[in-house]
Image 1 (cartoon, chains in turn brown, red, blue, purple):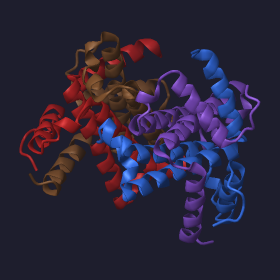
Image 2 (cartoon, rainbow over the protein chains, first blue to last red):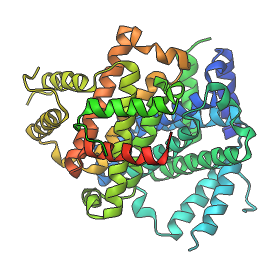
Image 3 (cartoon, rainbow over the protein chains, first blue to last red):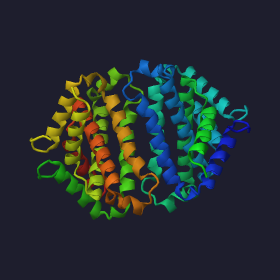
Image 4 (tube, rainbow over the protein chains, first blue to last red):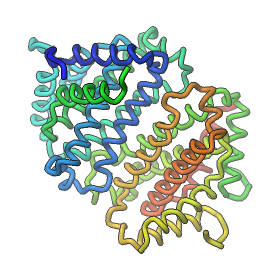
Length: 108
Length: 108
Length: 108
Length: 108
Protein backbone atom coordinates (compact mmCIF):
# COMPACT_ATOMS: atom_id res chain seq x y z
CA UNK A 1 0.00 0.00 0.00
CA UNK A 2 1.27 3.41 -0.89
CA UNK A 3 0.99 6.53 1.27
CA UNK A 4 0.91 8.72 -1.81
CA UNK A 5 -2.32 10.47 -2.75
CA UNK A 6 -4.57 8.35 -4.93
CA UNK A 7 -4.78 10.04 -8.29
CA UNK A 8 -4.35 8.91 -11.88
CA UNK A 9 -0.93 10.52 -12.36
CA UNK A 10 0.47 8.85 -9.25
CA UNK A 11 -0.81 5.44 -10.33
CA UNK A 12 0.57 5.99 -13.82
CA UNK A 13 4.01 6.71 -12.33
CA UNK A 14 3.82 3.63 -10.10
CA UNK A 15 3.03 1.51 -13.16
CA UNK A 16 5.93 3.03 -15.13
CA UNK A 17 8.34 2.43 -12.22
CA UNK A 18 7.04 -1.12 -11.84
CA UNK A 19 7.67 -1.93 -15.52
CA UNK A 20 11.07 -0.20 -15.54
CA UNK A 21 12.26 -2.10 -12.45
CA UNK A 22 11.49 -5.37 -14.25
CA UNK A 23 12.92 -4.28 -17.63
CA UNK A 24 9.54 -4.79 -19.27
CA UNK A 25 9.70 -1.62 -21.41
CA UNK A 26 10.85 -3.44 -24.59
CA UNK A 27 7.59 -5.40 -24.50
CA UNK A 28 5.51 -2.28 -23.92
CA UNK A 29 5.13 -1.13 -27.52
CA UNK A 30 1.85 0.69 -28.21
CA UNK A 31 0.78 -2.28 -30.34
CA UNK A 32 1.35 -4.78 -27.52
CA UNK A 33 -0.24 -2.59 -24.84
CA UNK A 34 -3.34 -2.05 -26.99
CA UNK A 35 -3.60 -5.83 -27.42
CA UNK A 36 -3.16 -6.38 -23.67
CA UNK A 37 -5.84 -3.78 -22.96
CA UNK A 38 -8.31 -5.50 -25.27
CA UNK A 39 -7.54 -8.90 -23.71
CA UNK A 40 -8.31 -7.51 -20.23
CA UNK A 41 -11.50 -5.86 -21.52
CA UNK A 42 -12.57 -9.27 -22.83
CA UNK A 43 -11.86 -10.89 -19.47
CA UNK A 44 -14.36 -8.38 -18.06
CA UNK A 45 -16.87 -9.28 -20.79
CA UNK A 46 -16.38 -12.96 -20.00
CA UNK A 47 -17.85 -12.47 -16.51
CA UNK A 48 -21.09 -11.17 -18.03
CA UNK A 49 -21.34 -13.35 -21.16
CA UNK A 50 -24.11 -15.72 -20.06
CA UNK A 51 -25.89 -13.40 -17.61
CA UNK A 52 -29.25 -11.78 -18.26
CA UNK A 53 -29.31 -7.97 -18.06
CA UNK A 54 -30.90 -8.31 -14.59
CA UNK A 55 -28.28 -10.77 -13.36
CA UNK A 56 -25.54 -8.51 -14.68
CA UNK A 57 -26.92 -5.65 -12.55
CA UNK A 58 -26.55 -7.76 -9.38
CA UNK A 59 -23.00 -8.91 -10.08
CA UNK A 60 -21.43 -7.06 -7.14
CA UNK A 61 -23.63 -8.79 -4.56
CA UNK A 62 -21.53 -11.95 -4.80
CA UNK A 63 -18.16 -11.26 -3.10
CA UNK A 64 -16.11 -13.56 -5.34
CA UNK A 65 -17.56 -12.11 -8.53
CA UNK A 66 -17.24 -8.58 -7.15
CA UNK A 67 -13.54 -9.20 -6.52
CA UNK A 68 -13.06 -10.62 -10.00
CA UNK A 69 -14.85 -7.66 -11.61
CA UNK A 70 -12.81 -5.15 -9.59
CA UNK A 71 -9.60 -6.94 -10.49
CA UNK A 72 -10.36 -6.88 -14.22
CA UNK A 73 -11.30 -3.19 -14.05
CA UNK A 74 -7.90 -2.55 -12.45
CA UNK A 75 -6.19 -4.47 -15.27
CA UNK A 76 -7.99 -2.48 -17.97
CA UNK A 77 -7.08 0.81 -16.28
CA UNK A 78 -3.48 -0.35 -15.80
CA UNK A 79 -2.95 -1.07 -19.50
CA UNK A 80 -4.81 2.07 -20.55
CA UNK A 81 -2.48 4.20 -18.36
CA UNK A 82 0.61 2.39 -19.62
CA UNK A 83 -0.52 2.90 -23.22
CA UNK A 84 -1.06 6.61 -22.49
CA UNK A 85 2.42 6.74 -20.94
CA UNK A 86 4.24 5.36 -24.00
CA UNK A 87 2.13 7.45 -26.41
CA UNK A 88 2.30 10.69 -24.43
CA UNK A 89 -1.50 10.96 -24.28
CA UNK A 90 -3.24 12.66 -21.33
CA UNK A 91 -6.28 10.44 -20.72
CA UNK A 92 -8.20 13.04 -18.67
CA UNK A 93 -7.75 15.76 -21.30
CA UNK A 94 -8.69 13.25 -24.03
CA UNK A 95 -11.91 12.32 -22.25
CA UNK A 96 -12.75 15.93 -21.39
CA UNK A 97 -12.45 16.89 -25.06
CA UNK A 98 -14.50 13.86 -26.10
CA UNK A 99 -17.36 14.70 -23.74
CA UNK A 100 -17.34 18.25 -25.14
CA UNK A 101 -17.63 16.84 -28.67
CA UNK A 102 -20.38 14.41 -27.65
CA UNK A 103 -22.39 17.23 -26.05
CA UNK A 104 -22.40 18.99 -29.43
CA UNK A 105 -23.04 15.75 -31.34
CA UNK A 106 -25.94 14.54 -29.19
CA UNK A 107 -27.88 17.67 -28.11
CA UNK A 108 -30.52 17.02 -25.46
CA UNK B 1 -15.21 22.83 -22.36
CA UNK B 2 -15.74 22.68 -18.66
CA UNK B 3 -14.22 25.07 -16.11
CA UNK B 4 -14.25 22.33 -13.49
CA UNK B 5 -10.96 20.78 -12.39
CA UNK B 6 -9.85 17.89 -14.57
CA UNK B 7 -9.97 14.78 -12.42
CA UNK B 8 -11.45 11.34 -12.79
CA UNK B 9 -14.38 11.92 -10.41
CA UNK B 10 -15.44 15.08 -12.25
CA UNK B 11 -15.33 13.35 -15.62
CA UNK B 12 -17.26 10.40 -14.18
CA UNK B 13 -20.00 12.78 -13.00
CA UNK B 14 -20.11 14.55 -16.38
CA UNK B 15 -20.57 11.16 -18.07
CA UNK B 16 -23.35 10.17 -15.65
CA UNK B 17 -25.14 13.51 -16.18
CA UNK B 18 -24.74 13.14 -19.94
CA UNK B 19 -26.35 9.70 -19.95
CA UNK B 20 -29.11 10.73 -17.54
CA UNK B 21 -30.05 13.79 -19.62
CA UNK B 22 -30.55 11.50 -22.64
CA UNK B 23 -32.35 8.74 -20.71
CA UNK B 24 -29.66 6.25 -21.65
CA UNK B 25 -29.48 4.58 -18.23
CA UNK B 26 -31.72 1.61 -19.19
CA UNK B 27 -29.11 0.65 -21.81
CA UNK B 28 -26.26 1.04 -19.35
CA UNK B 29 -26.38 -2.39 -17.74
CA UNK B 30 -22.97 -3.70 -16.58
CA UNK B 31 -23.19 -6.33 -19.31
CA UNK B 32 -23.75 -3.76 -22.06
CA UNK B 33 -21.11 -1.34 -20.76
CA UNK B 34 -18.52 -4.14 -20.57
CA UNK B 35 -19.32 -5.04 -24.19
CA UNK B 36 -19.06 -1.38 -25.24
CA UNK B 37 -15.70 -1.10 -23.44
CA UNK B 38 -14.33 -4.14 -25.26
CA UNK B 39 -15.57 -2.82 -28.62
CA UNK B 40 -13.73 0.48 -28.04
CA UNK B 41 -10.58 -1.38 -26.94
CA UNK B 42 -10.73 -3.29 -30.23
CA UNK B 43 -11.08 -0.06 -32.20
CA UNK B 44 -7.79 0.93 -30.59
CA UNK B 45 -6.24 -2.42 -31.54
CA UNK B 46 -7.48 -1.95 -35.11
CA UNK B 47 -5.21 1.10 -35.54
CA UNK B 48 -2.15 -1.05 -34.73
CA UNK B 49 -3.15 -4.36 -36.37
CA UNK B 50 -0.91 -4.27 -39.43
CA UNK B 51 1.90 -2.11 -38.01
CA UNK B 52 5.34 -3.41 -37.09
CA UNK B 53 6.41 -2.80 -33.47
CA UNK B 54 8.57 0.08 -34.74
CA UNK B 55 5.76 1.67 -36.74
CA UNK B 56 3.45 1.34 -33.74
CA UNK B 57 5.96 3.34 -31.65
CA UNK B 58 5.75 6.25 -34.14
CA UNK B 59 1.96 6.35 -34.35
CA UNK B 60 1.60 9.78 -32.72
CA UNK B 61 3.81 11.49 -35.30
CA UNK B 62 0.97 11.46 -37.83
CA UNK B 63 -1.63 14.04 -36.72
CA UNK B 64 -4.66 12.13 -38.09
CA UNK B 65 -3.63 8.87 -36.48
CA UNK B 66 -2.73 10.67 -33.25
CA UNK B 67 -6.22 12.15 -33.14
CA UNK B 68 -7.81 8.77 -33.80
CA UNK B 69 -5.72 7.09 -31.08
CA UNK B 70 -6.55 9.83 -28.57
CA UNK B 71 -10.24 9.59 -29.42
CA UNK B 72 -10.33 5.81 -28.90
CA UNK B 73 -8.46 6.14 -25.59
CA UNK B 74 -11.14 8.62 -24.49
CA UNK B 75 -13.87 6.14 -25.49
CA UNK B 76 -12.26 3.30 -23.52
CA UNK B 77 -11.91 5.51 -20.43
CA UNK B 78 -15.50 6.75 -20.83
CA UNK B 79 -16.98 3.27 -20.80
CA UNK B 80 -14.66 2.15 -18.01
CA UNK B 81 -15.84 5.05 -15.83
CA UNK B 82 -19.50 4.43 -16.67
CA UNK B 83 -19.09 0.75 -15.83
CA UNK B 84 -17.48 1.72 -12.49
CA UNK B 85 -20.37 4.11 -11.87
CA UNK B 86 -23.12 1.49 -12.27
CA UNK B 87 -21.13 -1.12 -10.32
CA UNK B 88 -20.02 1.18 -7.50
CA UNK B 89 -16.35 0.38 -8.11
CA UNK B 90 -13.63 2.96 -7.35
CA UNK B 91 -11.19 2.52 -10.26
CA UNK B 92 -8.28 4.30 -8.53
CA UNK B 93 -8.58 2.18 -5.38
CA UNK B 94 -8.94 -0.95 -7.53
CA UNK B 95 -5.76 -0.18 -9.44
CA UNK B 96 -3.85 0.85 -6.31
CA UNK B 97 -4.69 -2.50 -4.69
CA UNK B 98 -3.79 -4.36 -7.87
CA UNK B 99 -0.34 -2.72 -8.10
CA UNK B 100 0.24 -3.68 -4.44
CA UNK B 101 -0.63 -7.30 -5.27
CA UNK B 102 1.56 -7.28 -8.38
CA UNK B 103 4.53 -5.93 -6.39
CA UNK B 104 4.24 -8.99 -4.13
CA UNK B 105 3.59 -11.34 -7.07
CA UNK B 106 6.50 -10.16 -9.22
CA UNK B 107 9.34 -9.25 -6.82
CA UNK B 108 12.24 -7.45 -8.46
CA UNK C 1 -18.52 -15.81 -57.99
CA UNK C 2 -16.57 -19.01 -58.16
CA UNK C 3 -17.72 -22.21 -59.87
CA UNK C 4 -15.71 -24.28 -57.41
CA UNK C 5 -17.52 -26.31 -54.76
CA UNK C 6 -18.24 -24.35 -51.58
CA UNK C 7 -16.17 -25.91 -48.84
CA UNK C 8 -13.80 -24.63 -46.21
CA UNK C 9 -10.62 -25.83 -47.94
CA UNK C 10 -11.59 -24.12 -51.20
CA UNK C 11 -12.34 -20.84 -49.45
CA UNK C 12 -9.09 -21.09 -47.51
CA UNK C 13 -7.17 -21.49 -50.80
CA UNK C 14 -9.02 -18.53 -52.37
CA UNK C 15 -8.04 -16.40 -49.37
CA UNK C 16 -4.39 -17.50 -49.60
CA UNK C 17 -4.30 -16.75 -53.34
CA UNK C 18 -5.97 -13.38 -52.73
CA UNK C 19 -3.34 -12.37 -50.16
CA UNK C 20 -0.44 -13.71 -52.26
CA UNK C 21 -1.58 -11.80 -55.37
CA UNK C 22 -1.47 -8.55 -53.35
CA UNK C 23 1.81 -9.37 -51.56
CA UNK C 24 0.07 -9.17 -48.19
CA UNK C 25 1.85 -12.20 -46.70
CA UNK C 26 4.47 -10.15 -44.79
CA UNK C 27 1.62 -8.58 -42.81
CA UNK C 28 -0.01 -11.94 -42.15
CA UNK C 29 1.97 -12.98 -39.08
CA UNK C 30 0.01 -15.13 -36.63
CA UNK C 31 0.11 -12.22 -34.17
CA UNK C 32 -1.42 -9.78 -36.67
CA UNK C 33 -4.04 -12.24 -37.93
CA UNK C 34 -5.14 -13.03 -34.37
CA UNK C 35 -5.51 -9.29 -33.72
CA UNK C 36 -7.48 -8.84 -36.96
CA UNK C 37 -9.73 -11.76 -36.00
CA UNK C 38 -10.50 -10.23 -32.61
CA UNK C 39 -11.21 -6.84 -34.19
CA UNK C 40 -13.75 -8.44 -36.54
CA UNK C 41 -15.32 -10.38 -33.66
CA UNK C 42 -15.75 -7.06 -31.85
CA UNK C 43 -17.40 -5.51 -34.88
CA UNK C 44 -19.93 -8.32 -34.60
CA UNK C 45 -20.39 -7.61 -30.88
CA UNK C 46 -20.88 -3.92 -31.67
CA UNK C 47 -24.09 -4.72 -33.59
CA UNK C 48 -25.58 -6.32 -30.47
CA UNK C 49 -24.15 -4.05 -27.74
CA UNK C 50 -27.26 -2.05 -26.86
CA UNK C 51 -29.88 -4.66 -27.84
CA UNK C 52 -31.96 -6.61 -25.35
CA UNK C 53 -31.71 -10.42 -25.62
CA UNK C 54 -35.08 -10.38 -27.40
CA UNK C 55 -34.06 -7.68 -29.88
CA UNK C 56 -30.82 -9.58 -30.56
CA UNK C 57 -32.88 -12.66 -31.53
CA UNK C 58 -34.72 -10.63 -34.20
CA UNK C 59 -31.65 -9.07 -35.74
CA UNK C 60 -31.97 -10.85 -39.10
CA UNK C 61 -35.46 -9.48 -39.76
CA UNK C 62 -33.99 -6.10 -40.73
CA UNK C 63 -32.30 -6.48 -44.14
CA UNK C 64 -29.58 -3.88 -43.50
CA UNK C 65 -28.63 -5.34 -40.14
CA UNK C 66 -28.81 -8.87 -41.57
CA UNK C 67 -26.35 -7.88 -44.28
CA UNK C 68 -24.03 -6.27 -41.74
CA UNK C 69 -24.13 -9.35 -39.48
CA UNK C 70 -23.47 -11.70 -42.41
CA UNK C 71 -20.58 -9.52 -43.57
CA UNK C 72 -18.92 -9.52 -40.14
CA UNK C 73 -19.35 -13.30 -39.84
CA UNK C 74 -17.56 -13.62 -43.19
CA UNK C 75 -14.73 -11.41 -41.91
CA UNK C 76 -14.29 -13.49 -38.74
CA UNK C 77 -14.21 -16.72 -40.75
CA UNK C 78 -11.79 -15.18 -43.27
CA UNK C 79 -9.23 -14.25 -40.62
CA UNK C 80 -9.71 -17.54 -38.78
CA UNK C 81 -8.94 -19.48 -41.99
CA UNK C 82 -5.95 -17.28 -42.78
CA UNK C 83 -4.62 -17.78 -39.26
CA UNK C 84 -5.07 -21.55 -39.64
CA UNK C 85 -3.24 -21.36 -42.98
CA UNK C 86 -0.11 -19.67 -41.59
CA UNK C 87 -0.09 -21.88 -38.49
CA UNK C 88 -0.78 -25.15 -40.29
CA UNK C 89 -3.84 -25.86 -38.12
CA UNK C 90 -6.80 -27.86 -39.48
CA UNK C 91 -9.82 -26.02 -38.06
CA UNK C 92 -12.28 -28.88 -38.63
CA UNK C 93 -10.04 -31.43 -36.89
CA UNK C 94 -9.41 -28.94 -34.06
CA UNK C 95 -13.13 -28.44 -33.49
CA UNK C 96 -13.91 -32.15 -33.82
CA UNK C 97 -11.34 -32.94 -31.10
CA UNK C 98 -12.67 -30.11 -28.93
CA UNK C 99 -16.27 -31.37 -29.10
CA UNK C 100 -15.00 -34.82 -28.13
CA UNK C 101 -13.26 -33.31 -25.09
CA UNK C 102 -16.32 -31.25 -24.16
CA UNK C 103 -18.56 -34.34 -24.33
CA UNK C 104 -16.33 -35.94 -21.69
CA UNK C 105 -16.04 -32.71 -19.68
CA UNK C 106 -19.77 -31.92 -19.58
CA UNK C 107 -21.59 -35.29 -19.41
CA UNK C 108 -25.35 -35.07 -19.90
CA UNK D 1 -14.42 -39.27 -31.81
CA UNK D 2 -17.12 -39.30 -34.41
CA UNK D 3 -17.21 -41.59 -37.45
CA UNK D 4 -19.14 -39.00 -39.40
CA UNK D 5 -17.38 -37.13 -42.23
CA UNK D 6 -15.53 -34.04 -41.05
CA UNK D 7 -17.26 -31.07 -42.58
CA UNK D 8 -18.58 -27.79 -41.27
CA UNK D 9 -22.26 -28.79 -41.43
CA UNK D 10 -21.63 -31.97 -39.44
CA UNK D 11 -19.71 -30.11 -36.75
CA UNK D 12 -22.43 -27.46 -36.62
CA UNK D 13 -25.04 -30.18 -36.01
CA UNK D 14 -22.89 -31.80 -33.32
CA UNK D 15 -22.63 -28.43 -31.55
CA UNK D 16 -26.38 -27.86 -31.78
CA UNK D 17 -27.09 -31.35 -30.41
CA UNK D 18 -24.54 -30.80 -27.64
CA UNK D 19 -26.21 -27.55 -26.52
CA UNK D 20 -29.73 -28.99 -26.82
CA UNK D 21 -28.86 -32.05 -24.70
CA UNK D 22 -27.70 -29.70 -21.91
CA UNK D 23 -30.62 -27.24 -22.29
CA UNK D 24 -28.19 -24.43 -23.04
CA UNK D 25 -30.29 -22.89 -25.84
CA UNK D 26 -31.83 -20.15 -23.61
CA UNK D 27 -28.30 -18.81 -23.07
CA UNK D 28 -27.48 -18.96 -26.76
CA UNK D 29 -28.94 -15.63 -27.85
CA UNK D 30 -27.11 -14.00 -30.77
CA UNK D 31 -25.93 -11.30 -28.36
CA UNK D 32 -24.42 -13.81 -25.94
CA UNK D 33 -22.85 -15.97 -28.64
CA UNK D 34 -21.23 -12.91 -30.26
CA UNK D 35 -19.79 -11.96 -26.86
CA UNK D 36 -18.52 -15.52 -26.30
CA UNK D 37 -16.94 -15.51 -29.77
CA UNK D 38 -15.09 -12.27 -29.04
CA UNK D 39 -13.90 -13.59 -25.66
CA UNK D 40 -12.42 -16.67 -27.36
CA UNK D 41 -10.82 -14.52 -30.07
CA UNK D 42 -9.16 -12.51 -27.27
CA UNK D 43 -7.88 -15.69 -25.62
CA UNK D 44 -6.15 -16.36 -28.93
CA UNK D 45 -4.73 -12.82 -28.99
CA UNK D 46 -3.49 -13.29 -25.41
CA UNK D 47 -1.10 -16.04 -26.55
CA UNK D 48 0.60 -13.60 -28.96
CA UNK D 49 0.41 -10.36 -26.93
CA UNK D 50 4.05 -10.08 -25.85
CA UNK D 51 5.64 -11.98 -28.75
CA UNK D 52 7.65 -10.34 -31.52
CA UNK D 53 6.37 -10.96 -35.07
CA UNK D 54 9.18 -13.52 -35.47
CA UNK D 55 8.34 -15.34 -32.22
CA UNK D 56 4.68 -15.40 -33.23
CA UNK D 57 5.62 -17.18 -36.47
CA UNK D 58 7.29 -19.99 -34.47
CA UNK D 59 4.44 -20.51 -32.03
CA UNK D 60 3.56 -24.02 -33.23
CA UNK D 61 7.06 -25.38 -32.57
CA UNK D 62 6.33 -25.55 -28.83
CA UNK D 63 3.89 -28.44 -28.24
CA UNK D 64 2.12 -26.84 -25.26
CA UNK D 65 1.59 -23.54 -27.04
CA UNK D 66 0.57 -25.36 -30.22
CA UNK D 67 -2.10 -27.22 -28.26
CA UNK D 68 -3.34 -24.02 -26.65
CA UNK D 69 -3.52 -22.23 -30.01
CA UNK D 70 -5.37 -25.13 -31.62
CA UNK D 71 -7.80 -25.26 -28.70
CA UNK D 72 -8.62 -21.55 -28.93
CA UNK D 73 -9.10 -21.80 -32.70
CA UNK D 74 -11.60 -24.60 -32.05
CA UNK D 75 -13.43 -22.39 -29.52
CA UNK D 76 -13.67 -19.48 -31.95
CA UNK D 77 -15.00 -21.76 -34.70
CA UNK D 78 -17.45 -23.39 -32.27
CA UNK D 79 -19.04 -20.08 -31.26
CA UNK D 80 -19.01 -18.82 -34.85
CA UNK D 81 -20.94 -21.92 -35.99
CA UNK D 82 -23.37 -21.68 -33.09
CA UNK D 83 -23.98 -18.01 -33.87
CA UNK D 84 -24.61 -18.93 -37.53
CA UNK D 85 -27.01 -21.65 -36.37
CA UNK D 86 -29.23 -19.33 -34.30
CA UNK D 87 -29.13 -16.58 -36.95
CA UNK D 88 -29.70 -18.87 -39.95
CA UNK D 89 -26.51 -17.63 -41.65
CA UNK D 90 -24.54 -19.92 -44.00
CA UNK D 91 -20.90 -19.10 -43.14
CA UNK D 92 -19.45 -20.61 -46.33
CA UNK D 93 -21.84 -18.67 -48.59
CA UNK D 94 -21.17 -15.51 -46.53
CA UNK D 95 -17.41 -15.85 -46.97
CA UNK D 96 -17.69 -16.78 -50.66
CA UNK D 97 -19.72 -13.61 -51.31
CA UNK D 98 -17.26 -11.55 -49.26
CA UNK D 99 -14.24 -12.77 -51.22
CA UNK D 100 -16.09 -11.91 -54.44
CA UNK D 101 -16.68 -8.37 -53.14
CA UNK D 102 -13.07 -8.02 -51.98
CA UNK D 103 -11.77 -9.11 -55.41
CA UNK D 104 -13.70 -6.20 -56.92
CA UNK D 105 -12.72 -3.81 -54.11
CA UNK D 106 -8.98 -4.57 -54.17
CA UNK D 107 -8.08 -5.25 -57.83
CA UNK D 108 -4.59 -6.64 -58.35
